[in-house]
Amino acid sequence: MVVNTAQSILCAQSMPGIFWGEAVHTAVYLLNWSPAAALDGLTPYQAWYGKKPPVHFLRVFGCVVYVNRLRRHLSKLEDHGQKVVLIGYKEGVKAYHFYVPATERVRVARDVMFDENAGWD
Image (cartoon, rainbow, N blue to C red):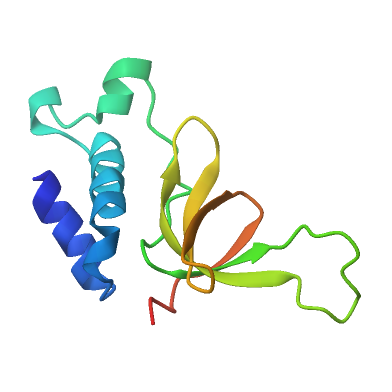
């Protein structure tokens, strides 16, 4: 189930295999927030906490995201957003994992704007 979900996540956005680990992590995260037959249609979150899980923060894996750059002395005319790709969720805090193609690094941030219609290029 986890492998099939991760494979679907990658194929849906035409993302390369280097993101396999992040896709598996995201698949497990999403499956824990999804209804389970073993719990009579409840989510694991519902079974544990006794209330429905919040899902307003879930976004499309592999979508384009603009992260607010927090650098000192940015001029008014400089671009304050950095174009990155969503590759997962940070557990324990309300933040997201991003891949920065320019530097080929993974970053965590909260102050973002999503373009869910644009995908990995």
